[in-house]
Image (cartoon, rainbow, N blue to C red; front, side):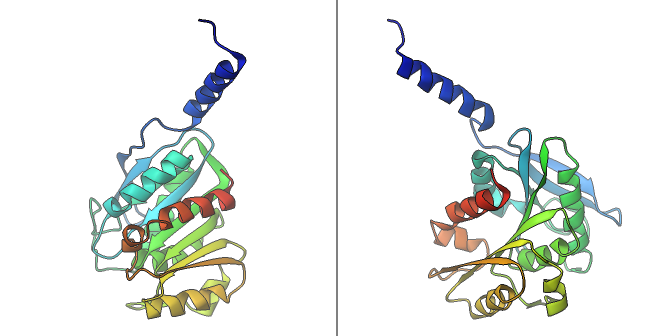
Length: 236
């Protein structure tokens, strides 16, 4: 039986979608070297050519694995994602209790990802949770290439890592997405202070009692909200 114009049109649309969306989201292990020679590890989820790039930064004592579901959803949406292990965590070398070099480690992750073929210039984002959120601000403040910063349960002062007014000012016009549980007072105070600084700031409050990446499991709408924000911000 011959195909109708509608059937041929549908087949053509599926062919186009199939060329830009992975059939199954998946990642592969990668590694790179920090400024001080420490070997850092991550999981790379590739989405094809001219894709926006997103670097995900985990909480203290965790690893890149806690981002697996979020990274897969972002990859399916059309972003190339690098979920990194902070030094001393997961597959990365170094001392996990030494926070000082970590913003620099995130900067090397962004530079490593942006140097890969297929990443669209001007379409880079950093997303962090808890410690990872505080570190993401510190790294993004020194990276003109980062256009957007997603912060899940950030802290103004995380064991001596301070987000003061001068540092926040360095974010400039970067888009910032701020998320906290209404049951997490310190994270709430932090996002309100960051929201009051210059630039584009969006806030999302969750009624779920959870912190950091645990919010993605507790709040079933949060992953979709992150994907939507990155799509609008990075345009993909």
